[in-house]
Length: 285
Image (cartoon, rainbow, N blue to C red):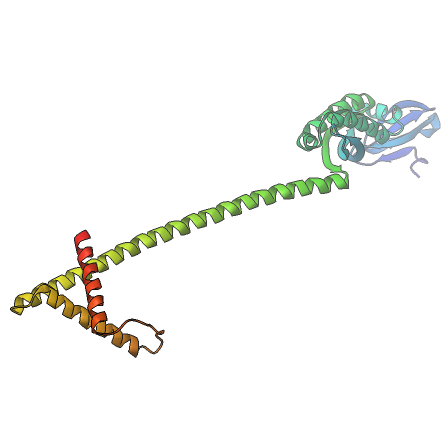
């Protein structure tokens, strides 16, 4: 119906290419346009001015001989002032863009090791963008941005990389665990040493208190009872403690059997041994 009245409707964000008898006439902007077909004018086609995106998947090889698939995302649009070039000079712009992307990626990636490819993906994207912008501007297209959205090595390589990473992390974890166990053992040893030291001090003070108590008892008893020597008092004290010990052993229901020599002579020997030990402890203190 529009052709009947020599009018053409161009949608917003589009432009139309007008020809007269097969020759380019002008670019029609969005809106209702007058195209008199009776004088040979007609619309040859439309171009969108919207931002377009093209994802290009390129397989190549890195410097360390690892095959990797690089996916580049190209964002581009038609230049309004060069719409005629975009319409007439390229029959398939996406194929042309892919060709440039393949050329740049396959020139950059083989110069880098696989780890460097991941680290320098922004530099690769920048190289692709510069090359595309320089080439496609002449054909009426503007390259707005180029992104490397994926780098996919071979599955076996990915598995090997994951295993290497896992082994490294396990090694770090083992070192940390060993260091923790080492600290625990050191602290336990320090605690045991401190405990034994304090236990030794306690035993030494206990023995010193026993010696001091016996000495005071012997001296007090000998002073209050005329004609009694310190040896007699000590023998009596030792005998009393000996019989108290025997009573406790016999009265204790869970005591193990203890075989000791018993008799008046044995009691005197025990008293002599205890007295000598106390005297030696008193001298060393």
